[in-house]
Amino acid sequence: MNYSLQVAGRSCVVVGRAAEELPNLLPQKRIIVFTDRTILALHPELFAGREVVCMEQGEEHKSLQSVEMLCRELVARNADRSTFLLGVGGGIVTDITGFVASIYMRGIAFGFVSTTLLGNVDASVGGKNGVNFDGYKNMIGVFAQPQFVICDTSLLATLPPRELRAGLAEAIKSGIIGDATLFELIEQHTFESLCRDEELLSRIVLHSVKLKADIVSRDEREAGERRKLNLGHTFAHAIEKCTHAMNHGEAVAVGIDLIAQIAHYRRMLPSTALDRIHALLLKMGFEVQPPVPLEDLLKALTKDKKSDGNNIHVVMPTDIGRCTVETFTHDKFAALACQSLCLK
Ligand SMILES: NC(=O)c1ccc[n+]([C@@H]2O[C@H](COP(=O)([O-])OP(=O)(O)OC[C@H]3O[C@@H](n4cnc5c(N)ncnc54)[C@H](O)[C@@H]3O)[C@@H](O)[C@H]2O)c1
Image 1: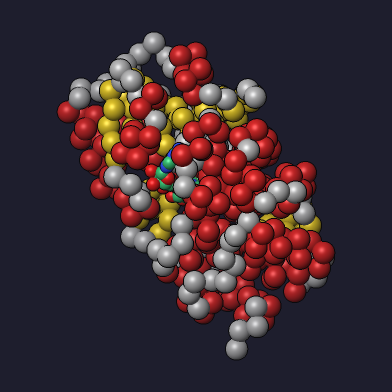
Image 2 (image 1 turned 135 degrees about the vertical axis):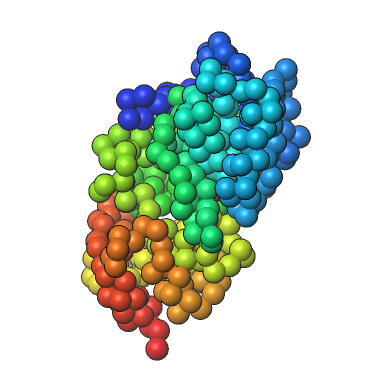
């Protein structure tokens, strides 16, 4: 399977084999590759003969300190305006690489090989790059499109099941917000069968990328429709702020379940759709109970960067494949969440 499509008219996303696609997509320039040690060890074929810089792994290293370290490394290596930066990795590597490339010497060209399911279906596509700051997710960053993104599902064979599941959360999100066929596709499988089926994973990636590419092409800077891609993220970011017990995808799964309950309480989401969302998350092995008390989440989400002054934009699912974005004041949303999730 080999597909390519455009995002925002200037970024090419290819679902295919990195080893085959890279020679066509990489410019005839000096290339510096950013990755992490796990990926370097597991997929050495992607790095043979290349200049490689490893970054630290883990969400806590998605920081300005890492950006500074990587910029120093580029200076030490005499990287200049003509150098091309290739990020090979999951969402953390690609978020950081895109940010470093965008600020180094006021911006150099970059591209990605995405190596996680979460990166394939979401993080690597769309041009959001950045790092966490003072406990706030993705607080410092830029919109900048990579020249290309290669989503290579053959690389997912080495991905631990927990990380694969995390990516599924974002794929399920894509299904709920705008692609009922994608949701049904995942519904038809067990987590175990899905893990083993590269062809199926490629279809899931392609559906998700198409949806994201369409939305981003219409609203690159998240002035409106792109907010839909944040379904479940209001609570997810609050969870990630309160605890490191869950990775991003796991937190998104909890957030989707909570917001679906709220939408159902408000009679926006039919019971059948709520039941299907809840059942699919459980079937894929997600924990849907928040890992911290809801009161703590509600306090944390008032500081979500997606809030706009005293307002917060919340994505409400209205069916499988449909959603709407609503704006609440923090107090109103907290009250609504308390009522619908039965908080005292
Ligand atoms: N920019 C965006 O639009 C966007 C969208 C969604 C999420 N994100 C961000 O993405 C990040 C999460 O990304 P992630 O889930 O890919 O996590 P990650 O980048 O931390 O990767 C998860 C782990 O898997 C390892 N790994 C990567 N590829 C592997 C492979 N093929 N085989 C074995 N191990 C492999 C990594 O070394 C890492 O330890 C979060 O920081 C989140 O905020 C960004």
